[in-house]
Image (cartoon, rainbow, N blue to C red; front, side, top):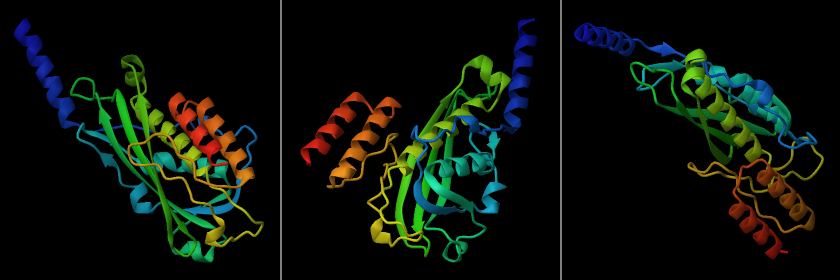
Length: 255
């Protein structure tokens, strides 16, 4: 009896290992809420570009998992951009940015990693998603690159019921972190197409960081805004108490 049980387990392991399992990692779009309570958006028109070939190409990782990261992210990514900027328009090519009424071009890219998947428990228990937003001016000049890391986990019962739930949570986490980073742009002037010099130095998150830093500025108005942003980051749990204290001291010392 024991040998038969071992044989059955072995056969199941072989079949599961040989298969590539497709999961859906779409985030819960209702959770992609505006970064600020007032819902005030930056007065910039942005265009974003995701190649169709990328959308249709699945990610297949070492754990035999297949998922369409860009396809599953696109609607939520546009909503995230719309929470931050006055408008967010999908472009069919990068070249369209120069002829469209956009101030910035944003090109996202995604890399992922899953953990906790094996032959018998293939839905991942932990999903890591690195989201990059390459930001350019409308004429194609690089401005900056922002990188955040989203992490999603799932218990045994829920990941068997919804196989891609850890991935959905990782994508949701990454989008909210990217939203907070993009919200740190500062814009002055009332024209719809500002010169590049009117954009304050944007926030850049290093590859392994999960919380944004604040762009330096010396004006009293901006100092007040930075303190408000710092308080919001602390309230949302995006920075630690030590990071909050250090940043607050640095802002006040600069006065």
